[in-house]
Length: 175
Image 1 (cartoon, rainbow, N blue to C red):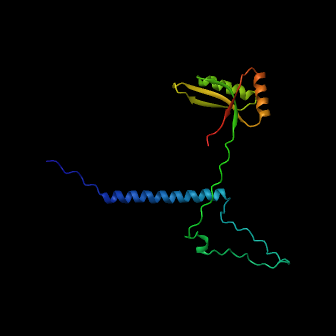
Image 2: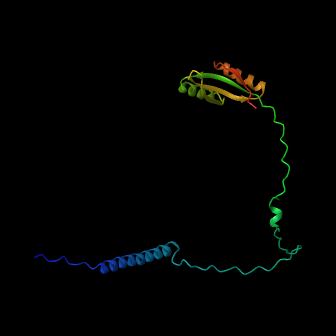
Image 3: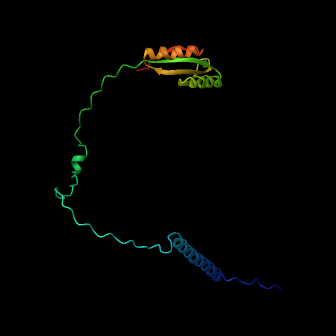
């Protein structure tokens, strides 16, 4: 005949866990107090002597407190009465933008190389990726937008001095 297994007392296990947590909290609090004393040089609650109050000075302007603004709730909110809608301004004529296209490539690495070459010349360029009707993808390297003709001519001459052909592209945004 086998002996039944001894029954463990679950109450004593709960007490030992509680005791362990309590001891851990006490040790942690003591360590925290010790670190605080070490950091603050022994007394974390130092009192600094207060300076004696200075005598009041005479001012020409009497001290009057600023009055807080008064708001009336119903005046702040918009009323329920319908108002006229603002008239629509006539749309401004679309501004024409000019670009100098320095190249169009199917290989994006070639477009990046030209953009880097232009950056070394001090010319800021943008790469535009466009898909044509034939499902071909081109990467345009464009300088601009340029607004004045003298700016366009200066940039075009700089590009031609460095053997970079450029084509003037006029872009009118759709209204």
